[in-house]
Amino acid sequence: MAPPTPTGTETTETEALRALRRVFGYETFRDGQQEIIEHVVAGGDALVLMPTGGGKSLCYQIPSLVRPGTGVVVSPLIALMQDQVDALRALGVRAGFLNSTQDLDERRLVEAEFLAGELDLLYLAPERLRVAATVDLLDRGKVALFAIDEAHCVAQWGHDFRPDYLTLSGLHERWPDVPRIALTATATEATREEIATRLNLGGARRFVASFDRPNIQYRIEPKTDAKRQLLRFLREEHAGDAGIVYCLSRSSTEKYAAFLTENGVEAVPYHAGLDPQARAAHQSRFLREDGLVVVATIAFGMGIDKPDVRFVAHLDLPKSVEGYYQETGRAGRDGLPSTAWLAYGLNDVVNLRKMIDSSEGDAEHRRRLGRHLDAMLALCETVECRRSQLLNYFGQSAAERCGNCDTCLNPPETWDGTVPAQKVLSTIVRLDRERRQKFGAGHIVDILLGKKNAKVVQFDHESLSVFGIGSELREAEWRAVVRQLLAQGLATVESTYGSLVLTPASAEVLRGDRKVMLRRQPERAAPARSSAKERRAPVELPAELAPVFELLRAWRGATAKEQGVPAYVIFHDATLREIATVRPSSLAELGAISGIGENKLAKYGEQVLAVLADA
Image 1 (cartoon, rainbow, N blue to C red):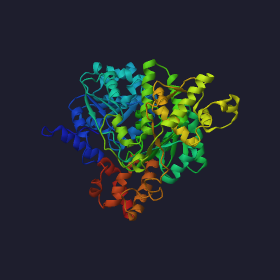
Image 2 (cartoon, rainbow, N blue to C red):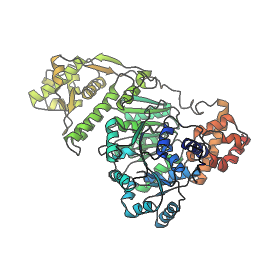
Image 3 (cartoon, one colour):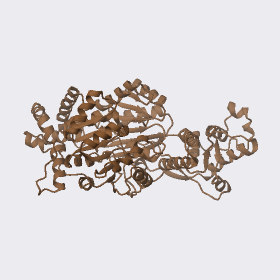
Image 4 (cartoon, helix red, strand yellow):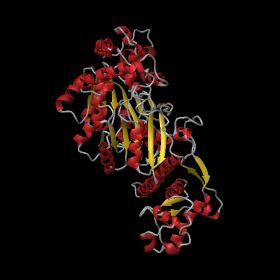
C-alpha cells in the first residue's frame, strides 16, 4: 500500500489519522499513540514502554506507512513473522520478512520488493543485521525507520536476553538520518536505562504509558496440590477458554499437559527441548484454534498476538516481577475480563534461592537476582492490593485498592507470628549449635509438630528441646510461616542442600526485639466472576444477539481455515460483537464498525452482510 501523499496543506497528524482510519479501521488513537507516532514521523528517536495489548505495533506501523521508504522491524520472533506479515497483508499493508526459514527464491523475491519500494514493512531477525549482504541490501534501499521490538531483549541479565540485540547499537552510526523506535511491554527504571545505553538511545524521547491492565484479575494462592488446583481453576472459571500455563521445567510442561488432556481439557506442551516441528505445530494450533491450553516454559508467548487468551496460570514462582508481568500480560489483549492465577509454595522459594546461589555471573549479579526474587515474594505475600504493588514496582502510582485482585476481593488477615517465628529460628539454632546439622524446611516442621518419623528417629531429634512445641499450628500453617520468614529475609536457604539457615536479621527476632507480622491465607472464596458457562456469550452482548455472534464466529473460523491464518487476522471478537449489535445492512454502515478498514471491507464486506441476512 503506497503511503498517503501529502497535498501540502495536510499535517502529519492528518496523514497518520487517515492511515489509522483507512487501513486499520479505527476512528481515534489510544492514549499516548498519537504523540509517539507524530514524533517518529517527524524523524525523532523514541523509547516506548507500553503494556501488552496497548497498541505498540501501531506506533511503528503507521509511521512506516506515512514516511517515505520501508519500515524495518527488528524482532526476535522468527516463528511468528509469517503470522505478523499475514495479519498486515490482510489489512492491505505491503509487508514481508527475511529470516532463516525461507529458501533462496523466497528471500530474493522479498529483497527485490524492498529495493523496488514495494514494501511498507520489512521484518528482520536481529542476527540478520550481522550479515554483510543484509546491511548492503538496506544501504541500497530506502529505510523509513528502524523499529526494535521486544527491546528488553537487550538487557543482559534480563529474562529474555538475546545476544544479537547488542549489535543494534550500531544502527545510528550506519544510518544516522533514520529514526529509531525501541518498544517493550515492561521495564523498571534500571532496565530502561540499560535499554537506552545498549541501543545508543540516550538522546531518544521516552514515552511511558500506564502499566495497568484493569481487565486482568490477579490472584495468588498457596500451592497444596498443584494439579488439582489447576484443574479446579480451569473447570470452574475457564472451561473451553484459551490460556497459557507456565512451568519452570520442561518435564513439568509435559506432565501437566498430559494430566489436563486426561481430564478433558485439551492441552499441548511447549518447551525448547521439543522437536522443532512439534513445537511449531503446537504454537500454530494455539493461534488458530479456539479453547486450546498451552502448558509452557517461559520460552513461549513473547510476541503472541492472540487477543482472546482468557487466563495465564503459573504453577511455579516466577523469578522476577518483570517476568511475571510480561507473562500475565499475554492474557486479555482484547480488553475483556481475564485472569492471572499463580500457585506457589515453599519449595518454589527454596529451589529459586538455590538456583540464584549457583547461577552464572559475579556476586553483584547474584545479588540482583536475589532482589528480583525478594520483590516477587513481597508481591505474593502482601496484604495490600496486588495491582497497586505491581504498579509501584514499575514506578507508577495507583489507587490504594483496585477491586479486581484477590486481596481486594477477599482481604487476608494479619496476625502476630513472632512466637511461631522464634520457634522455627530456635529449631535452626539448636540443630546447628547442638548437633552441627542443617536441615530443610520439611524436617524442621516435623520436629516442631513432634513427628516420630524415620528421619527424626535416625538423628535422635526427639531429644531436642524444641521437639513437639508447635502443636498450635497445622503443617500447612507452619510451612506458610517458614515461607514468609524467607520472604521477609528472617531466614534463608543454603545453596548446596537447600537447608534453612539464619540471617543477620534473625537475631532481632530471637531476642524479642522485632515483631513478626504474618499473612493468614483467607479461606478459599468463590470465583469473583461468573462461571464459564455464564460467560459463553460475549461480554456486553445481550443474550438475544449471541446466536448472531456465533454465526459470525463460525464464518470467521471457516474463512481463517481456508486462508490458513489465525481467526483474529480476519476480525477480532470485539469487531464481531459490534457487528452483531449494530446489524449493518450496507457496506457503508459496515465500514463504520471499529476495526474494519478499507481492505477488509472490500475483501469480506459482502460475506459478512450475507451472514447477517441469513441470521
